[in-house]
Amino acid sequence: MNRRVEWFNSKDTIFPPYGTGRTFVGFVLDRVVHRINISILEDVAIVLDLPNINQTRVLTERKKQLHLLALQGFIDRQSLLARGVAAIFNSKESTFSTYGSGKTFIGHILERRLSTSVTTTILEELADKLGWIKFTSSF
Image (cartoon, rainbow, N blue to C red; front, side):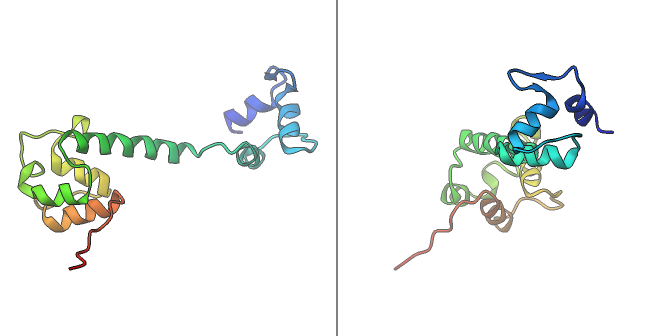
């Protein structure tokens, strides 16, 4: 049995003022709960509107990535494409914190290993992945 489930089912786990884990879960779900399992804990997470840990981690990681790009002057699609690929991403001297080189950094965001140097097409893909809007000329 999952350790988290065992913890909720333990008589030693107390949620003041509700009492045991089962009593607390029953209160949250508005029903009698005799035994807690993963499915019931998922129901509790939904009722309490708890974020998915993976989603929270991804959002935190994306904020860090956007911050690192901003430190280099890349704040939107236009600034990314205006400076071009040679600006920083193909330089061996440039580093992006724990990610390493610009190429490795971009590969991490795109969730794949880049086998070639960073190109304009790859920068476009990066901008798309970051949700940066495309600018279209209306002239």
